[in-house]
Length: 154
Image (tube, rainbow, N blue to C red):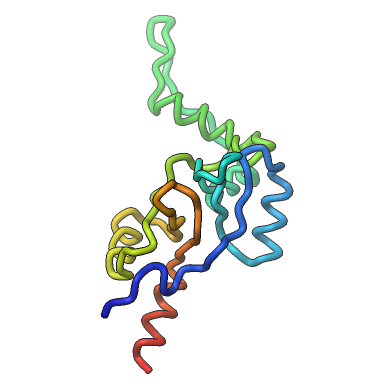
């Protein structure tokens, strides 16, 4: 019988809330040596995920979009809304200001093969695992899948 997400996921993952100070989330990631955390609301429902990638804006800063002037008009060469979003991430002080919204998720009963396909197709490193009510019950990482593959070769 194929392994399911429930067989290999990390149960009861550490979660943070939107109002959690960014410094606190950074400490958790560094101390626990993990690369991302689910973000939940007051009822435990998933609202986002904060990852190392989201935090890179804090260090690298943001470059304003290139533009040209034409007949007293500014014409942006890239979408200024993207710049606004990235600037918000670079200046954010709470998890909610920096997190990625609408993360890709998976259910515990899905097979590892299905989970691996989702991770590969969507280029994500972790999948929050949700129960029927949308609460976070676990997290599955690429490392979890690799460890399961190694264990099945024994």
